[in-house]
Amino acid sequence: MIDLHVHSKYSFDSLLSPKTILKVAKKKGLTGIAVTDHNTIRGGIEARKINKDRDFIVIVGGEIQTEVGDIIGLCMNEEIKSRTSIEVIEEIKDQGGFVVLPHPFRGHKLNQCIIELSDAIEVFNGRSTAGENVKSLELAKSYNKPFTAGSDAHFASEIGNVQMLSYIASPEDIRQSLVYTETDIYGIECPYYLQDISQMIKSIKTRSWKSIPKQIIGLTYRTLHRSLINAQ
Image 1 (tube, rainbow, N blue to C red):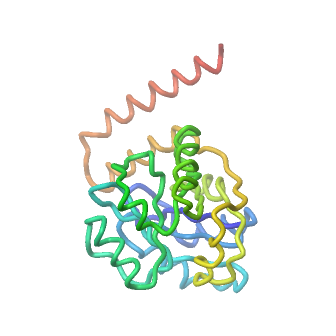
Image 2 (cartoon, rainbow, N blue to C red):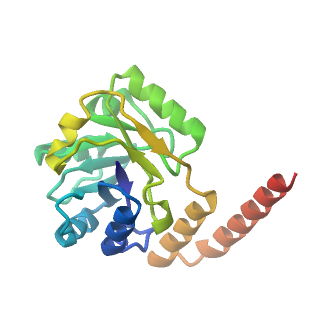
């Protein structure tokens, strides 16, 4: 089983070291992970370098922010320079990479061109709602696109929350392993409060101090609201 969407400290909203990612992933019984940091492949490069287990696969990836939303590239060797969707896809493919449209119904302005140019669609994302994931699955089926799935982990506890059955023996096998549009996927949704904490980490790392009080208030409100609902 493999988790195809994990973030390290090289993302602006995570503190996870590549070493910790590998340790936790192996402890949870995964056979591989894709490190897909925001706008960089540094985390994946480092994780691949320190991984000494031949039975564990590290896929170097990046989740690139564009004008239509994030686009994931897998099996990459070079940083993506553009932030324009079509050019990002071209850069990924020019280096032999694999293009994934992640969480298409969260933070995206979808258009047919981007969907068709994507090699696969992420149909289960651990940080998306059940409804968003269902719509993602329907989208992939309607375009006959292969499925991917990932936890979108920013914290150790999230790693492996979403897994997909994989026959990948090396990063280069990913395209062949996803020839079939349907695959076995296991997943649970991320606790909602972790997304709020990720945003606070982002504010701290980007020195956006003014955003933090509002984020704390929002987290407190949502926590109390959820507690009241659970108590009923």
